[in-house]
Amino acid sequence: MNIVLATLNAKYIHTNLAIRYLKSYAKPEFNPILAEYTIKDPSFNIVSDLYQKKPDIIGFSCYIWNIEETIRVIRMLKEVSPKTTIILGGPEVSYDVHDWLHRIDEVDFIIMGEGELSYKQLLRHLDGQIPLNDVPGIGYLKEGKVIIHPAAPKIDLREMPSPFRFEEDIPHIPKRIAYIETSRGCPFNCQFCLSSIEVGVRYFNREKIKDDIRYLMDHGVRTIKFVDRTFNISRSYAMEMFQFLIDEHKPGVVFQFEITADIMRPEVIQFLNDNAPKGLFRFEIGVQSTNDLTNDLVKRRQNFTKLSRTVNMVKEGGKIDQHLDLIAGLPEEDYMSFRKTFNDVFAMRPEELQLGFLKLLRGTGLRLQAKQYGYQYINMAPYEIFANHVLSFDDILHIKQTEDILEKYWNDHRMNHTIEFLVTDVFDTPFDFFQEFGTYWDEQGWSRIGHQLEDLFTRLLVFLEQRGNVPMEIVTNLMQIDYLKAQQFQPRKIWWQNRTQEEVSKAIFKALRENPAIAGVEFANMNVAEKDLYKHTLLTPFSINYEAYIKGEIKKQPGYLFTFFRKDGSPYFASIDITKLA
Image 1: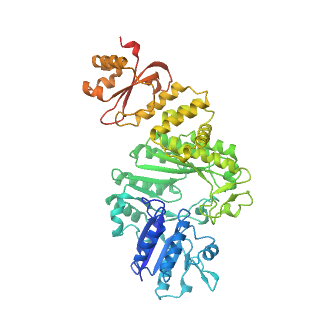
Image 2: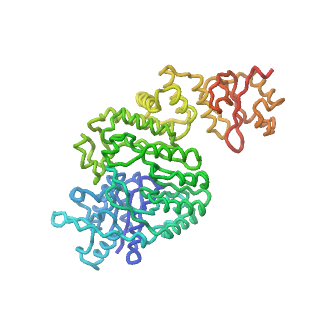
Image 3: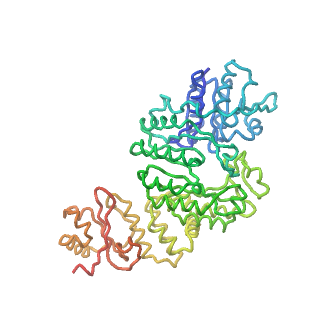
């Protein structure tokens, strides 16, 4: 039989782990071909490529981000290859199987839940080796009636073959994110999450996992993302893996984990702060809400005090970047409550804060309780809500405006100095800044047009000027620091209008030639040649003292910002007091 395992990833850099486990488990008896595409690829192109593989059987891995595109591909494929057996699996089709089988006539079988055993047994049936009744965990139509087989027994993960040792994958390993499981299941019961459905946590063989990581690093992987729902549920296991990765990592490799922050012990964090190379690890932490009632309603156990302790301790260590998640639209979280949640979490200044919106996934408790909370949502992936009985669609739209600005102005870290000043000294709360600016951005129609880096600065200036009650001189200076700090070379075009007059520039350069220490002892020690001084220096009229600012004080001092663009490293800054040059 000619067997294909296919999926549509969100991006090329993503790698589907599921189809690789299916392939490795099916071998050596069967040897499926892997076929990965993206949701951006034209359906006709995908169908053409699959058709040319002359498949007898195609299995599709289905998720909320690819199901609609996958359905289009299936329907087209069945037209040109009607004898091909089509199998679906994955979290998106494991629930409401009756609905899927009636909706997609072209599908022959759906595998529910953990698929390796069911898939191999189904291949054996299709190969004529065993009767259909011996295949567990599948659904199909028979004479218009849905037939559901009992679930497959859980696999002993310690005996699972590696999903990474395929020759055809080797050229792609350095170009893609590698996803790896060390466990399956979740100990928690959050009602918005599919992981809550599987009871208990099962672990893979630790030594096999370590060998797989070595293999991936030996073949040039750059990012390995652990997909365990709670990587640190076992402290001893997490510590063993952290130590292994510290000891055996290769330069340039990054490891990402989903952790539950409120159960992480301080001694574990201290160990990482003391021993982990900077940038080796990245933590993803789901906060979702700080509203106690909301967390109780979704059966989410969370100690925000301990969570904050972990996030702050990791941040103080300066070794690990953190990505924190929020979900708008959870039960009884109205607009003002979500505002508080946002501000509670932003107070920790995570390197990244993702603002998501509740999706009522098939199979989750909240989807079953949708009427109880007045949820309105579209019954099509990704099942995002429009409103509930405490959050209107207008509220949702306002929060979405906040999300857009948060992504552009915080998560990309283009204006850290500016944003910190605005959210601390100008606006009542961080949420109010992102909300007000987000609404203004949308009203100007900027969300419908592209932008260059300079546009982010000029549009923020326009917003703040029209808002009023903003110390524009200080804000403009901070924006100039942020802009210049990101430049490797002196920019040919700058977005601000206030320039240094020629006679002032001559006086400053003359003084610098005679006494470089005017720009600081560090600059004097650089021994910059006169030619490089002129070529790589920018002088900007400035209203505050830079040296005082970096020590935490906003001190008014009219003068000039001296910026020297070094060949290696970030630009060097200093304040020049024109009154002291004579």
